[in-house]
Length: 323
Image (cartoon, rainbow, N blue to C red; front, top):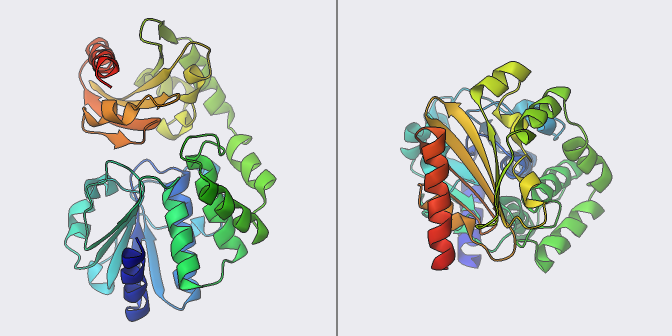
């Protein structure tokens, strides 16, 4: 780990122009990590651009620097290196992943167990709570200032990827980092209110429709919900408004695994997984080409809804028999 950090620091000190990017369907860890790194490099006098294919979800627009994110990839000739954050695979960047893959220096910083170690430097720790925790280690190692803006972004990223410091990936080091970030200016109440208590009416209306689809498979300890394209159109919502929905079935006594099926296109579904204890839903997601963590994962599956559900439940049953 220290060798990887030293290699990253060497590149930062040697070069001047950097691109930062992350995965499609952005979450708090991706955005907070990107913005914290952007601010650190900019404070060092570096030329930095943050590119994301997708727009920033509304609930994360309060993050300092979010207005600096671009959605059109400029000429790559202008950059000495690219940081790819919180991406288990390079193609998760989206449509521009091939162009970015041609860059000579790709720095891969991630905490997903399914990461395939792409890039010229891969700083991977699947025991870390978040990519932001790895960025925190980098900033500390470099002995650069943790400004209030950096602290807010890193804290928000860690908060969301630990489920409010509730998930198994929350370690002593995670809490120490969070405490330091609070000391540097991150306000836990303000950040939490912006993320968890700032829902749009559109999201609540979508949740109402989702709850009407709630189904239990008590034999397998599974609860799941469905959101269709019609639901999204009827409420005026988009996929980003579904964030947090998958946690609801898991909160019910007797449910060990919760699933959320989102119809992206006809016969294509995004499936999000959450679990309790040591039930490894990453193995389920990876069997369909997805990935994630022991208690939180996702994948895309093609097919009609009934067959997709059947296939997912079958894999869950098989893995429960062969843990």
